[in-house]
Length: 108
Length: 115
Image (cartoon, rainbow over all chains, first blue to last red; front, side, top):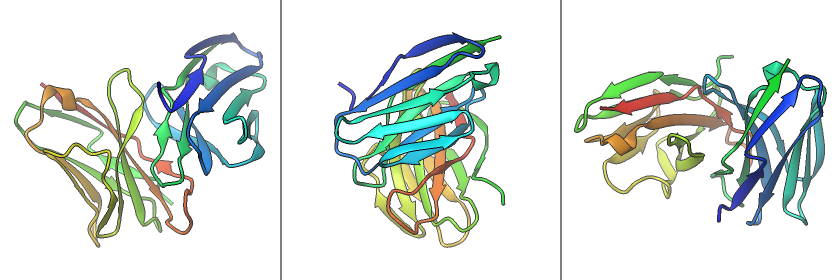
């Protein structure tokens, strides 16, 4: 069993829909990253959080340390949001442990 | 301020050849991380370096793989005597190195294909 699990693995949505991607982890962590990997392969860091909630534009990330769970929400989704979203955790060290990603496709 | 640079972006090697992958961190960043993404798999940690020091190489195969981050110049990930199973995307990330567990900034990756 992976230490970091994401759900769903694949997600399709119509433009404008509200999207939620979930991440559960089984190790103690000091912080969690949400990353976006575009079809071309480049990786962008969206958020790093260790408690509570962060918002950037249409993206919202929340984390519940007690429940070992984080969610990434996208409001008013757009086709340009189509990408793989990856959850990664810092297990108290500087090396990240990654989930296998959620592939999102948003159709116009 | 340029982001993390990696070159080459694509590299083709025949079995038994050597592959050298370069990573220039963001300006002012002293920590470099290398990750590997095998086809249809998630990213996996390989090695964490600071200038002239390997901090953690627990994710790197014991044989054929080495990494360095010299005082001057880019970080280099070197794979000797490549095999088909080494075909993957190799990503480098950097961070400032001022606090623990900082945001890491990723390069565009090097896609290695071993024929």
